[in-house]
Length: 233
Ligand SMILES: *Cc1c(COP(=O)(O)O)cnc(C)c1O
Image 1 (cartoon, rainbow, N blue to C red):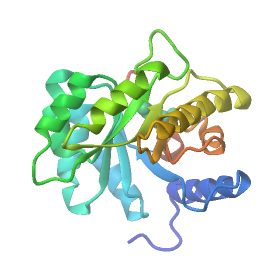
Image 2 (image 1 turned 45 degrees about the horizontal axis):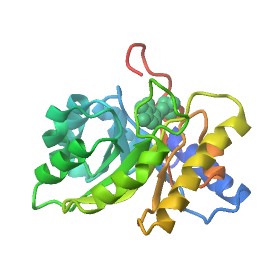
Image 3 (image 1 turned 60 degrees about the vertical axis):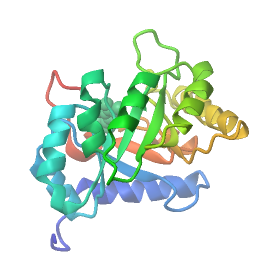
């Protein structure tokens, strides 16, 4: 364990999140912190874990799986948050605990079929193209219900919620508007009897707006590990 005098950005982020929960009248501990460790070394993850961090997010399959395997004895919770190619579903189903970036039935089918029987069902979120951007991943809000109903019938997947990456903005109200749309969509799905307990939204630059709009898990990279090197965003 690290000595008491050592500090890690994880500590101050957790304090910030707690303060934001108070500010926006959210229940204490209702917002989980995922440390996005893409492009970081296994040692960076190990250090964050020694400060109590349990949830880690990865975007690139090969890189992520290497860390999952290397750090298996730490018993961390691993989230896959990147784009998914068809030929990568098996290795994801075998190594990750969560997938936040489901946008196609074929990917959901394969993940369910390939999830090893001795593992718990894979927790999944549907990625929503919340700002209707042409280049962005995710399904349109109007397609979310059908995909949610489809996933709910797959035996080895457990539908947990919705995920979004809004179009970049430094304006707080604009950030909130996007996140509020995701929150509204969650309410619509709940009203249609789809059980969802997760809103995966908020990154280093917009997590306050996400928490204000009901985020249940923020995905933070830069604010924990510093700027990433170029070409891998
Ligand atoms: C990289 C990434 C993050 C973390 O972004 P930061 O700005 O470094 O906090 C969160 N979510 C997804 C999907 C990402 O790709």
